[in-house]
Image: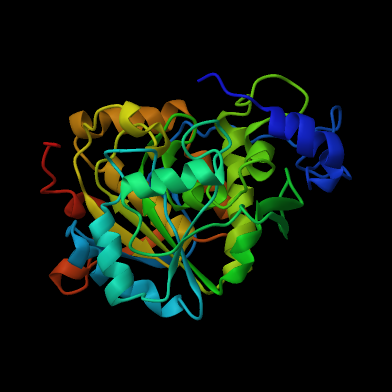
Length: 366
């Protein structure tokens, strides 16, 4: 894409400076390079860690194969007790006519029947396109059919800095100010691939999706004062994104829940809209947890449990982008467990393995 960076480079970075944006380094720490003062990125994000090599406690992850409005409602009910007060539903509403987003009718039924006072929340994009300005974004929402519930573009009214506890890249992250209007958050995520992130699960949905479109997303994607808007990649990008996520998760905890819908999993993100690569990975089901790391780890494990030919495209995308660093860094930051009990709600809440969950997955048929 040919995309301008003028809002960040000429605006926020020029007027606020790195320190006021919450960008480390400050005092050198063990995670920083003593020569440059820059945090040291942990490598190895291209390597998938099998379950047997993980350590620590286990969280609960609920699973259903029922990819329907009723299936979504059933699995949200397992984690919905965490949602109190005014609920924001963070989901990716997609570019115009995007073919792979979560079906609107599923979300419509969930809101109408289970979360009638909830609001869908979104932010404007960092790239120039059909969701770059609020006016453009609202037109895209109309085209895509997100008209059955209120949609709050949370950075339309400004930004707010939330603390990043324990981060090595940031001390705080710039979010859409409207986020503060909500008591609880449901991360309702279309799990899929991503051109930079490798995979987009709950971590990306929140880390990129709650950061505002001009300052926060630039802090994650771009080294200031150079021309490449997307110069930060691989493990450093995963770490920056995850620190952004941590700011939002810490803000809402324990009133936050995570649901990943594993359907129409292109290697492309929903931000690519009709230009997304064709889907070749089988549909799997829906997972839910109160633990963000467990939800994303289980989703990755389900993909990796598919036969080689069925997982190849998405597994290659995850590995080549070094995206497994999302998972290991969430664990390092104390955001959850990468071990879990996978509970099959279709079969009386029995514990199953990822291989059991995907045993009858069929090749994607469109």
